[in-house]
Image (cartoon, rainbow, N blue to C red; front, side, top):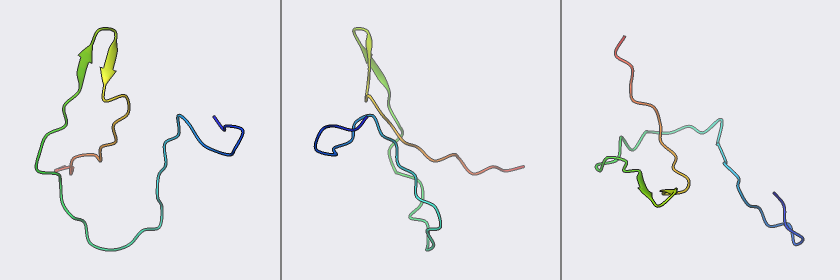
Length: 53
């Protein structure tokens, strides 16, 4: 959604064509919780695990 001043809401951004070294997987696991009828965090980005096959 775009607001009246050009601000964005409910947007997911991906970057393509980025080169360089990976910083590795985060040290802490991702945690998704449900409070009432809402999941927290509302949005979460994660990269896929390395495939071994």
